[in-house]
Image 1 (tube, rainbow, N blue to C red):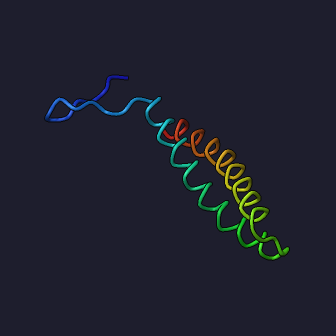
Image 2: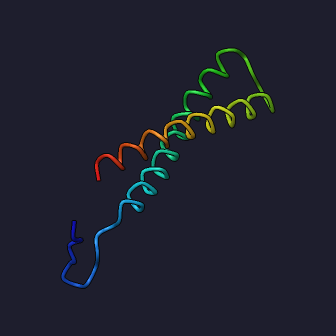
Length: 79
């Protein structure tokens, strides 16, 4: 399929660019959701100090790592 060129010789983003953008957006959204949910769940069970920070960091990384895969796949299918 030919790539359309804009009036100032700007080409459209490639499939790799779409997937890369979806990967980064998914990671950012997943990290934000992990921070909110991780903070709430850790405070509920009574963690404080370094335990709280470590558990929140772990939850943020896990949720970001999972969500970015789904958004990247969606961007690949959408393209």
